[in-house]
Length: 158
View 1 (cartoon, rainbow, N blue to C red):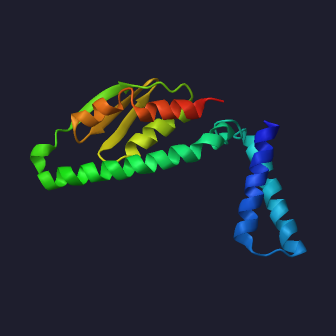
View 2 (spheres, helix red, strand yellow):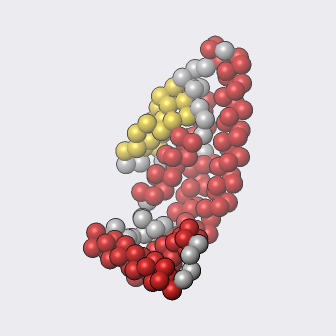
View 3 (tube, helix red, strand yellow):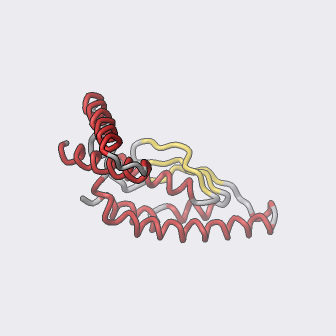
């Protein structure tokens, strides 16, 4: 808990210093006071934990973001092809798929990654299943046991 509070302190301090642009003694003191006030509130609300500040994701998240951007670009190209080919190339599908993620954070990252990828939308997330809608049934088949699922499982490892 102390580690997460300290990291929140560092993050808020960096954010405040970058956005403030004023470094006089009074402004720095007021900034410190506001950061301490926020830390007291978050401590009393008991909202600082491994889910609110997922430090274990930090080492691998940027590699995942780069891979996800590549997948989003590829999916955009596929969706444009469907639009050019017309309605006959679209075969909408709705299916529940099993997921391998064990943490709530991993499940949410997976569902959000599905939704960010054009042509697919994560509609519901219940336990170890996600209800997915896709423009084409092959997109859902691709998600079952996919590279995205594997990469997010790697992110979850602590």
